[in-house]
Image (cartoon, rainbow, N blue to C red; front, top):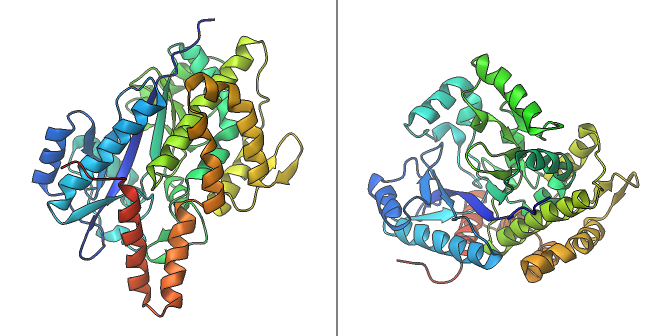
Length: 379
C-alpha cells in the first residue's frame, strides 16, 4: 500500500465586529471584500452570513508552511478590516450579537440554503475550523473516516470557543454545535465499508432532489467532494493560532497512526455511534474539564490522562512530520484552558469588578480581537 501524502489545508471562518460597538457588522463593506481578495487571491471569500468571512490556506506539505500561511491570512484580513473600523474575531459564536439581525449573503448557493433551512439557517451565526488532510485513495479515506470518528470529541474539547449566545453564558463550552446540530445531515459520519457504498448512498439523496451534491453533507468528518481529502469539521474555530495549528497537527497525525495500523493489518476498534455521541456531548458541554469515557475501559477518564495516552500513540507520527512541538502544545491548552475558558473568565472578572453585563461582554470581544491576530498585521 502506497503511503498517502497527508498534505494539510486549514479553513477558518471569522466574525467581523465593529471596533466601536463591539457588535457584529450586518454587512461587510464591498470595498473591504475586494481589498481582501486583491491581497489574498483565491484564499478568502464571503460566508453564509454577511458578517462572516472565510479564509483557507494553500495545500501545505509541512506544519511550518500551514502556520506561516494561516498567520499571514489572519494578519492580512485584520489589516484590511481595520481600514473600515472593523476587526475579525476567531470565535465560534459572538458574545452578545442577535441572530435575528443578521443577513445572509446574496449568492445563489446561500439563497437556496436560506430557502431550505428557514429559521434554522438564519440562526447559523457560528464559525468553525475545517482541516483537510490529503489521502488520494478514496477507499482509504472512507476506512479512516470510520476509525477516526472515535477521536472527534477529543479534538472538539481542545478547540472550544463558543460559551456565549445572545449575551448569555450558556454553560456549554461549544454552544456552536447546539446551533449546528439543528440542521440536517450533521453530526457523526455514517459508517461505510467502501467509497462505492458511500457514493451509492449519496446518489440516493441526489437523485431524489434532496441535495445537489456531497457539499450539502455537513458531518463532523467527511470525504471532501472538491478535493481528495478527509475533512475534519467538528472543531470550533480557535482564537489563538497556536491552538489551531496544534489541533490540525494532531488530526493529521491521527490519520497517519490509523493508516499505520491498517498497513500492519490492524485497526482501531469501532464503537457504536451512541457511545461516541456521549463523548461528543461531554466535549460540547464541558470541553476538557470533566473527562471523556474511555470506551475500552467503559469509564470516565480525566481529559489530561486521555491526552497523554493519545500523545504516546501519535509520537512516531509527530516525529515523522516534524511537529512534535505543535502536537504537544495540547498540554498547554489543557493547562491554561481553551478560548471558552478565557472568555468566561474575562466576563466574570468584569462583572465582579462592577461593570454592567453589556460592558463585560464587550470586554470579551476586546480579548477576542487581541488574541485572534498574532504579531504585526500585514497592511
